[in-house]
Amino acid sequence: MVVFLKLGNFFFTIQSRRLEKLSPFSVLNRFCHFAPKPQENVAIFWDLDNKPPDPFPPYAAAIKLKATASSFGFVQHMIAYANRHSFSYVPPVVRERRKERKLLNQLENKGVIKPVEPYLCRVCGRKFYNNEKLVNHFKQLHEREHMKRLNQIESARGSRRVKLVGKYSMKMEKYKNAARDVLTPKVGYGLADELKRAGFWVQTVSDKPQAADVALKKHMVDMMDQRGAQCFVLVSDDSDFVDVLNEAKLRCLKTVVVGNVNDGTLKRIADAGFSWKEIMMKKAKKEAVSVVGKWKDRDVLKRLEWTYDPQIERNVHRSDDEDEDRLTEGSVEGVHDGCMQEDNSSSWWEIDSDSDIIMSQRCQQQVEQQIKSKAVKVDSVESWDSFVGQATNQGCPIVVHFTASWCMPSVAMNPFFEELASSFPDVLFLTVDVDEVKEVASRLEIKAMPTFLLMRDGAQVDKLVGANPEEIRKRVEAFVHSFRVYVS
Image (cartoon, rainbow, N blue to C red; front, side, top):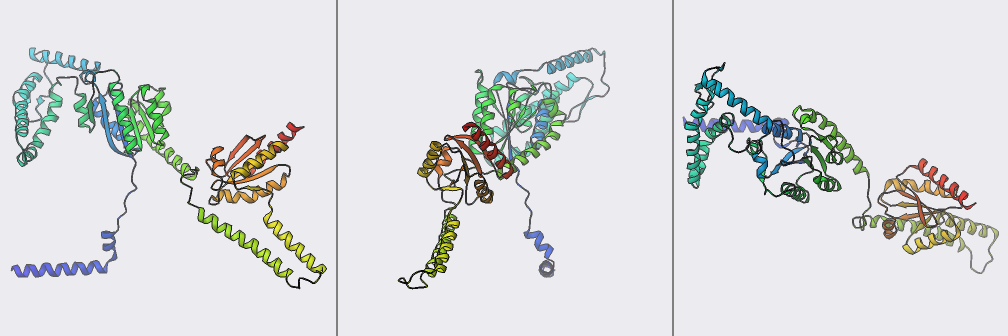
């Protein structure tokens, strides 16, 4: 019988392998997977000294805050800082609720009122018609049992401790959920425990003034240095966090502020701002979709925008420039060689005829047309200083085109710039390659290609960034007209 079962399993595996070979979809399901696009990490920083979740319950507020932050990406870190006084503070709403509960207990003990439904113990299931009896039952029985379990776990070591944690985990979780509704917290109203239950890392700082702010700022800066998150959610109305938000924006990080001050300083600096009411009513989660859309549009525009960095662009396109120089030299040499071949068609002692003279003149004109250009190319810092100095002495306006051989919009603007130079013969048109003359580009703070500068008396008058021929022509015409009026 055993041999028969083994043979059956063997034939079954062979048949399944044949089916996999016959159907390509099974192979695709095994080896092909489509990984989702990775989300940006989100970090929540909560200043509990300044912004406790009043008047909402801490656990519900923390859960709604996390749900809203998840609209911006994957919530990786949830951090809260406060001093001892913040955790011992009891909001007025909680105080009124406790007073009402105390009055109801007195009336129930005197028999004046009776609850419609009995109080149910959520641990053992017993029913009570008096809330104080339920509390006494819970303290005398379940609280003692819970302390015994904790003592056993603390006294155990190694594998025994792991076994005890696994054995009592369900009972301890059941006790915590029931105790939250029955027992009154000894300190405060359970702010720290509620936030920990929601998944926050809660840290208590010293009672010195601004201690929580300093610790929270340091943690945020460390997170920026480690690049642990791309979106920072700050829960505070304290204007001391302005510097941290500005630092995050300088590092191109996304910022969101949660606070009840509608026109606060932090909300004006941050990319988005919400109030606690909007968080609890889920209005902020709906508005987060439009905020994420704006961020995506901004990222696309940043990818299209190019910034010049001499350190990065030092040797990237040097080979392309050398190939272009070789091609231009070869073309010019080809023209020269053709002229020499035509000149050497006759002996050197023979007198040139009219046809030879005409041919030599045509050849020379071709070379001049290929080499000569209306826009003068600047190949060094010395030539730049020389051109600018001569134009300043002669009272000639200057139009400069900062370009790069690898930038397609700049290359596309070269013919237009030549045409513009031929339209204004009394203006000096200069072409500067940012890779060849980096000192000039850094001196004039050129950070994008193409860039056009209008200069008069050696000083910059106007600046235009981007390939916009119509706008460039309008600017140059207005600049030349104003210069002529200025000279006259």
